[in-house]
View: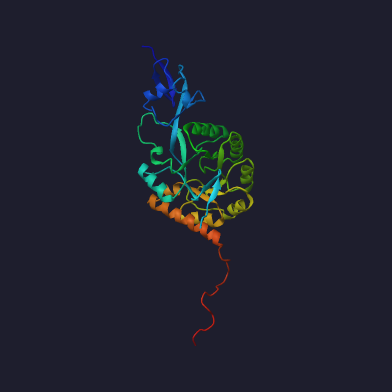
Length: 69
Length: 256
């Protein structure tokens, strides 16, 4: 089966071609979690996670809130 | 006596804003927030740890009880801070943001020029901005003019616990800026918080002063009481200082 790679938070992740942002989050164990996604420096709004298809070599940032002052 | 303050069109009872960093675990975070009496709590934004399924700080914060105040800690440019707050907005924050643009890693002193630039852009985008800044009146005036809802001058370097290093500057800011003044950073113990409030600050923001104590939950309560005590002392108006004694007991009627 063909695969492609994307970068998530600086780590290489292998995904099936045609994966969406929502499918990537499920693959990472983040389905349903409070996260925000940036792809190639542009935010992918939550409402578009299910339709936004990943392209090979996309650079993704997946962030959340952590404790801080 | 009802003594509230207004920010972003809302009345607040609590005058302490607390951070959520550096606690031993989520249970301690939850207990400290409760003991502090805070209504607003700060959070930071970071990459998700892809290898860890550990609970997140959001599990420790009752969103019905506390308003989230996302910060831009670790940002060294206006662009980085704005990018961070765009992501915070996407995460579903409340409407307030704590802007900090750091200028130096050793002191964590703010880059005031970049902070004013970032604040100006964020206000235009509709953010409700609370900026961390130096205890400098002119910077505070520029931030207020830019449309910030409050100014948050430091008392001392972040996490230093050195207390109010320059109470005179804080008082000048309070007297000359037309938005609430919230001392942010450097409060190390209860008396520091009381001094900030006695100077006339509207509120105090702290994290390490509580989380870094031997017993954080007890210190959170101490800070709540100190802020309350300092505020009441400010409203009461302290007695004038004098150089020599002034007897409290009558000088007449002494036995001979």
